[in-house]
Image (tube, rainbow, N blue to C red):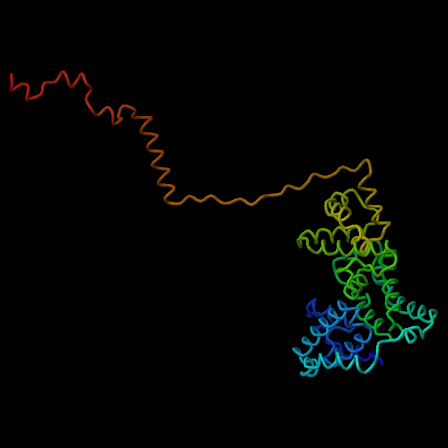
Length: 365
């Protein structure tokens, strides 16, 4: 059964750009283009269900079921198909298992290894296409690493089509495709940001340790790149903008000047120290090495760290505070200019009291 017609059910570009990331991941898990209607979602779910043994692959079945329900609910909510699709979830599960048994080992090995390799090479040739307008740019032109590249292929769609190819329906063939994509990314990462992000969403590399990859070095590279990508996105927008500007400057000037080195020192220091795998997807190795060697050259002086201005709370004088301050000032001035006017001097001393005769004593005398 062919599902090539599912590609034509994709939504308009406006809807695709507005899809939440969770819904995009659900469509990718079903190997569908974003915005496919309910009929396409049901067919893709039925097809994917045949490749999973629910008894031994309970987690994979749960992820597939969750992706199907999310995509189906989105399609129904936006009028992309029949409105009674959600009620068919259990029916599809039972019908898919009863209609056709799981793929037998004999059927999975019908295609010869040579034929599978040819199919893998065919899809890899499409997935390895580099952005033309970046690879053909002159060194003096600004590449704008922060912007999206309209000339790059839609890797999500191409990868979804590859996974729907019946010639790669066997689990071993799909694992071979995943391994080859990981190898391309680890060995030649420059300008493959789009392929990396599509593969992460499709194969869920950001949620496991890539244990399905036989080459442990490649698996480690993928895990490190996924972790750094998440950390980089967690930075403040201002910091990311500075780092993207530094990448643009490096791509436009492979041989850096002292002014550029000084201007982008702190952004490059952060990228080279904490985001090396992530940076290798966006900067070729020879430019990265040239800038790194320039920073470590004996004649380069590290610029002073920028001063961080801490926020200050404004001090406001209220009417009550002004009255209190005025009373304090008047009290101090009174003590300074009229020291003899203290309250203790208003009372007569003992001698003054003894020298004065009271009227009662005078009358008695």
